[in-house]
Length: 297
Image (cartoon, rainbow, N blue to C red):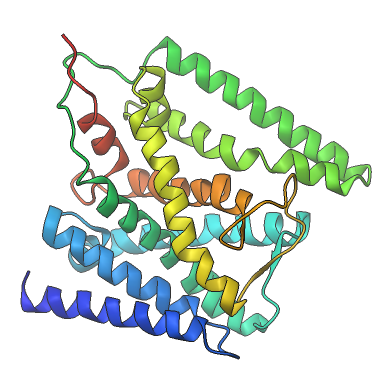
């Protein structure tokens, strides 16, 4: 690791440590901004120096492409936060942040860098897992994927229609219950949509009876969710309210927030990265899936 990379990684680690101190300090609500910036710099640098691929390298060499990715994540996450999280719920709020503070800490920094940090953390965790080599002739695009995509699209449409119908009839709790499964189905639909464009994906790998990539992604999304959510149980920068279906908690965090909530957020980052950036830029999900296609005689 060069001295510059070490300095960037060290700065990221320092920012992350400061954020945890802020999280446990009374009255310091905006702990998440230094956390996402620090963890992004830390894991992005580790990926760049260890694997030679990271969105940080895109920022350095192709800043316009990086800004396109940042903008795409910011727009999608804004649509998740305001129409879904605030208006249709509300499922969460930021009681200690003014509107101007939310603009900076939530929409310009929190969501975009939070999802970039989640993606870099995921790649860092996933890459060391031993693979079994490519399986000759494996294909991710076929009738099985097309049928699965059609089924997912129908389920998405049914749930959206049910949510709209329940909402317009005043049955708000029923609408919220209908929206919750979409957190799982929508990223799977997006993943299969990319598959039909010729890119290997997590769902298609499972249809090929290779469940490890999808299962590992689900597991790591929960781990990443714990890293991002547990410090907030002390700080209270955001507060969850009205989460449907269950009140079960893991380490003080509603279970649905960790899964499918963080699976949904992680998949937003992975799918958008795969669409916006060139294949050599980052350790893309499709490359990890292809790598994990075990050879079979």
